Image 1 (cartoon, rainbow, N blue to C red):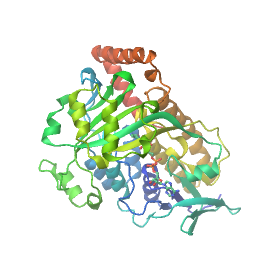
Image 2: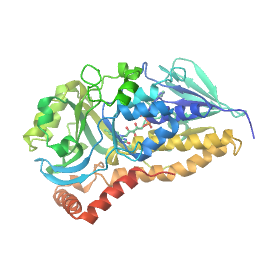
Image 3: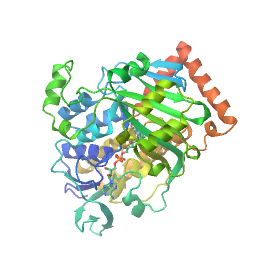
Image 4: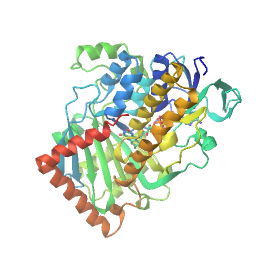
Length: 449
Ligand SMILES: Cc1cc2nc3c(=O)[nH]c(=O)nc-3n(C[C@H](O)[C@H](O)[C@H](O)COP(=O)(O)OP(=O)(O)OC[C@H]3O[C@@H](n4cnc5c(N)ncnc54)[C@H](O)[C@@H]3O)c2cc1C
């Protein structure tokens, strides 16, 4: 067994890759991350990501303690309710969530850009921007070389693909792995949070996660994102002193344009959208969302019409097919690169973080001499594949993010909608069912290995 400390190449500075890089560096394992974007502020989809206990636990385990505290301080105000609304903004159900007093066992709202800035903090010597991975070679001496589009290359002992849904590493390593269109399209928008837009929303919606079950197979999700800084990026007066001290010295805020907003995503089966929806942007895209939601409550339509056109983004929802186990080697994958899932259960980023933490633990065991590097990879993959693809299946089949869902069928759709609303109405009104729903919510979002 080699006693040399391995050098790990990570392809992609996304959620999972950066978490892994922090964890390895903290454990004294040499790591370099290669990212195609040119700078730390480039190319990010601006939607909200819900991080549950699984994701926060991984961040706590991998990040330096002070950076984990910065992560907590940069989260938006935590949701206190899980609501189900009709398109007319009537509450079908409202489940109280737990207070956010625990750093890990809490449901947190994170802006993708803000999380990226947190994860890039202190990683200047580890992350190489403007390096688009093209292919790799595995060598007989156990090393692996990654090649980049600019003609450069890097050599390491392990190559970890964290390059997301369209992973170039996966294309070469597992060419039979399939990522496919789930058949739904999202239009994501952000509405500036002002005294006026805040005033349009009832308290439970302002302080909650709200799923909108509309008629005709048009769905939505609404989150209010309130941060500790104002429109000019200055700390708000009511920020607790400990958080203020952390954020005042945090350089990430200078790179992060995220401000208080209402995240409103409208989605349906792709059949309901114009054929060119993925090419539309700005006001044109918001117009598509307004046409789809013609029978929605005037407040929701007012919010859509006030959306920042720059923020409007069409997202073709993808999923992946389970991949049978393969013979492990010096290349492995984590996050969307191996198990892309629809956003239906809000666990893609959580699962990428879980993978990162699990792989870190196995690599630490290898460095401690308990197993070879390839055995560490094999042990990681044996655990990751079953839970990863279980999440893929739940996300597709139990959330209305498959274009084939009954929700989108002409007659069955009405029955499916009545059934879903009836389920949430009864569950939220019968105390033992309500308690079980909330317990199950945290159990699912807190799963660990
Ligand atoms: C609308 C929407 C809402 C979502 N909401 C949630 C939620 O609430 N909770 C949740 O847990 N998940 C959510 N997700 C899923 C989540 O965003 C992803 O699962 C998560 O970001 C995956 O992380 P990752 O590290 O695997 O990949 P990413 O974060 O996508 O990172 C991949 C990185 O690799 C880089 N890259 C790609 N190709 C190359 C290359 N060739 N060379 C170098 N670099 C490359 C990319 O630029 C990127 O930085 C949502 C997704 C969508 C679409």
